[in-house]
Length: 342
Image (cartoon, rainbow, N blue to C red; front, top):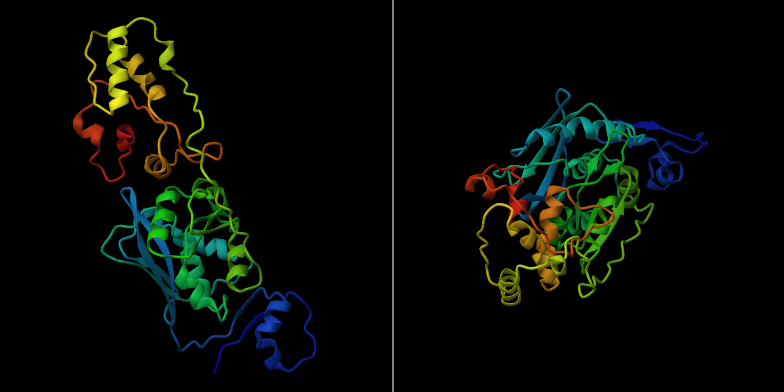
């Protein structure tokens, strides 16, 4: 026997029982949730996402199995604390999206299981996988959509999809892997708007993704833009402001024109940092490859903003003169000191 659970938001009309199980009835009457799956069968769903390793990404298959047994929710595949905590965010976001979260035995595997998974970017693909396995998402084109789509996003408790760090290297990797589209937070759309040949589908809430996968609603594709790297850039510190120091200025001009290294030596207060800080203003504008590399670092560190989603100015970093080589290069897994080497 199949277990039938129906919670309706509209008054039932007198039709035979089998009519209420049809997809047409489900879509037209906006069911709060529907689950008429067999308790004897395990349900498996697989979604795709991208994880970060350094400045690059790699594909992660989110495998969700819902089966019989005592109610439980386990995430395996070397998740860190933030990934393990996604259990509570996912459950609450699904409930607050007016979808029943059944008490079943749920196992989530992040494949490949041999690499450490960090961050809250897996919230959305985990939630979508659970809803597919539970029967809340049904579409005859679903398998094809899942094969071509990656999901990235952090869920808030009310079902809103929050901004995620490192979205640019994630989208670049999705493009390299041949994926057709990526569903991501709307706040991250500007940051990846320069990428071509990849459908960017920005969303605000979990329900938008559910309606899209069910075929009830389309998500407007974010139109990619052409980045103008030849425009004039104004720097906060300009090389023309330096008075005197003709020999040093001449050396820096030669280093800038020939892409040479330059070492400045002198007593404290002689103007070494002042001159070095103004060097980017006489360097040529970055090309697209250089701008992507710099923006990837800023994206991973969460330093991009809606005002400046794509970094086109050459950065300058000034670590303290007493910094150790270990601190400068960075040895910890979550070290942010690599930003000093931009």
